[in-house]
Image (cartoon, rainbow, N blue to C red; front, side):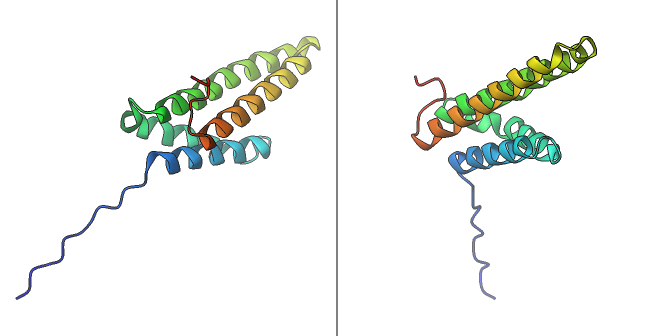
Length: 119
């Protein structure tokens, strides 16, 4: 009887995971929330792999995207409420621009192998 071959555990590196997280986040964002489940999937992926990224530059990207999601959600909710008094549309526009800026800045920083804050 022959010995079984050792099974290698292929791991996906953190850089790829971070690109996938940015891609899912962008897909949910670009579809104006129609595929919002992609953004939620990105958030879940970030929380699941957060411990693995601790101490690397990818941890800064994970925190960057997580903060973008939660702050964007908060400001969209507040702006949505403010639409009842006709001033919320400016807040919604500002939040969308801010989220887009953070998404682009973070992804470009990842491509350059640096943190989103440029440190």
